[in-house]
Picture 1 (cartoon, rainbow, N blue to C red):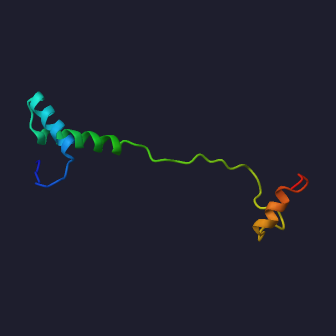
Picture 2: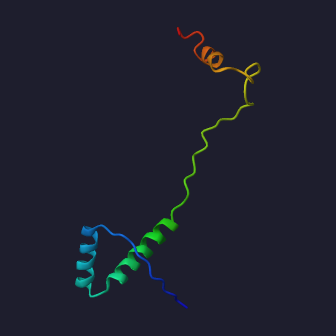
Picture 3: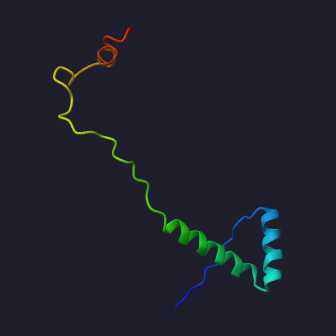
Amino acid sequence: MVTHMKTTIEIATPVLEEAKRLARKEGVTLRVLVEEGLRTVVAARGARKGFRLKDAGFAGTGVQPGMEEGRWFEVRDLIYEGRGA
């Protein structure tokens, strides 16, 4: 059983005028056109897959010994050690 609910929405005047012209041209009501548009958007957004970040990790044993509590400047110095920095 389909139920109906009245609601009020604000639509920018140029969009509403174009929608009314299209509805008249197609011989349908504005309500039909709005419902069709909403169904299309809801279906498209419902079908989207969630974003999943690719795992860019690598195999390893974790943090190197002595760096478990490393401070950033110590890590930075080790990264650039021997590279002229």
